[in-house]
Every structure is written in structure tokens, then in C-alpha cells.
Image (tube, rainbow, N blue to C red):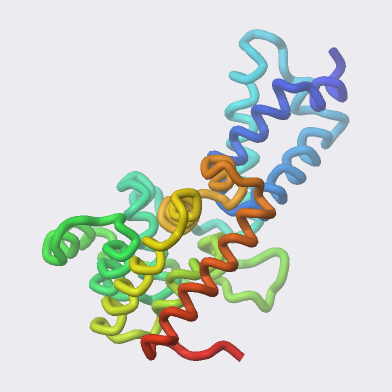
Length: 251
């Protein structure tokens, strides 16, 4: 099998898809990475694929190749700095805490409120502060180290984290602690009125950080329908918050 045929084979395409979904949560980044990988595997007359000598299985050979390409892709897209390895080793909640601290500029107590509202953390505030103190003590990257490659006018911190702002976080921004807690109660009340599939969709996308497409499959919806459903749900949250005097009308 020649390299051109190999590139379009099911094994190669499935491996690309696997690495893509494992390394990138954002759907747009997944598409960008897939295009990048295809281009790189075609580079220099399919040199990377021609180097496969069948000394191991094809998927075993491809694993380091594709992961190295993913790292290269990240460096080209966001510069050489991103979420520190030490933070990533602490787990997903630590990564999210670091992102909220550095990108969104929330305090640790504010992040606690967000996690409680999302039902991602069930402990007391004191326990949370002690557990995530190492994350707070980790320096945020300096903006000058982030060099976006697609649009130099973009905020470098937004590019660094490579994820869009969470709409639920956006609804909670700039609220005092007591109003944020009140907003959390309103959001929970609205969530309880949603269907089981809609509640699952909200949890998977905004709490578990799955892509809309992946969450849609879990919730038994097609992606376009899931996006429409989420848009309607967010509008419902906003309307309920405004009815309680929380937030501002969007113009």
C-alpha cells in the first residue's frame, strides 16, 4: 500500500481522529488540527508515512508522530507557553481553576462559587482554598510570551487557553458574591425544568468541557440540534436572571 493510499486508510484516519479528540476540546481547533496533520503527512512526498517500516503496528508508529504534530500545532498557534505540565498533572479541575484564575481573572473564592453551581465541587470553601492553593501560587504566563499566528490583534491570553469563554461564566461575571450565589440558585431552578437530555447536554458541555458534537452524541441529539438547544437554554437562563434583577439586558 502506497503512502497516498495509506493516508486515506481507515486506520490512519481513525488514529488522527482519536489523537485530535484527546488533545483538543474545541471543535474549531479539532478541524484546524486535522487539516494541519493531513498537510504535514503529505509534506516532502509523504516522508513521515514512507518512514513506516512495519516493525510495529501502524497505529503504534503513528501515536508519537501525531502527538508530536499536536505539540507543534499548539506551539505555532499559541506560542511556546501554555498551561504548565504541573497543573495538567493535577487533573482537569486544576486546569480549569488555572484557566479561570489567569484568563478570566476570577479569585479562588469566586471559582469555588462557580464549581459549586456547576456541581463540580461538593466540599466547603476552606477545603477548596487549601486544595487549590498550589494552583493559585503557580504564576500565570506573561502576555508577551504568547504570539498568536492567525490574528495579531487577538488577546494573547484568549489564544493561550485555546478555549472560548464559557457562557455560564459570562452570565456570572462582575457579580458580587451574594448575587452570584443567587444567580446560581436561579440557574439551578431553570436547569431542573429542562428535559433529561437537555440537562445532560448542559452538564457535558459547560461542566465536563466536551465539544458540542461529542455531547450531542451522548445526549442522543445531532450537533446542529444540540447547538440550537443550547442557544435556547442560555437565553432561558438570561431571561430568568433578568427577571430576578440580575445581569443586564444585551443590546
